[in-house]
Length: 107
Image (tube, rainbow, N blue to C red; front, side):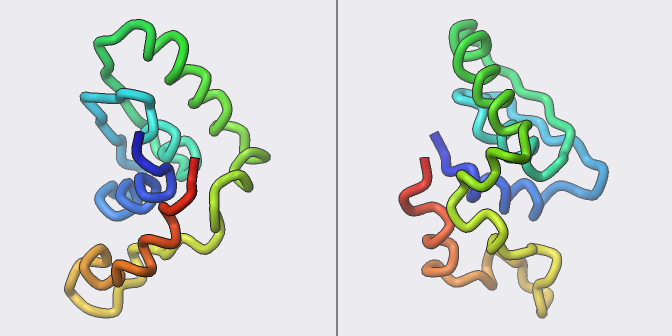
């Protein structure tokens, strides 16, 4: 399972406004959870029925409620990838210690 804040950042980095995110290997649905928080449309594909019915659906329901977003570590401090000052990508511009603060200890 990937940290939701990491996936939020990546989804914002690569998805155009009004874009739809495709995750062909949804697993526990972290990408979909990130899309719920960031208000992106998404398509999740997962072959394991138990994951779809029990894990992903419960996680998506939980993260679709903005009142739960405060559970994300540093929810409002996540950098905006569109504010990169140079032509280099925001992912390259963000130093490793900055990104680490958003993914350490997140459940």
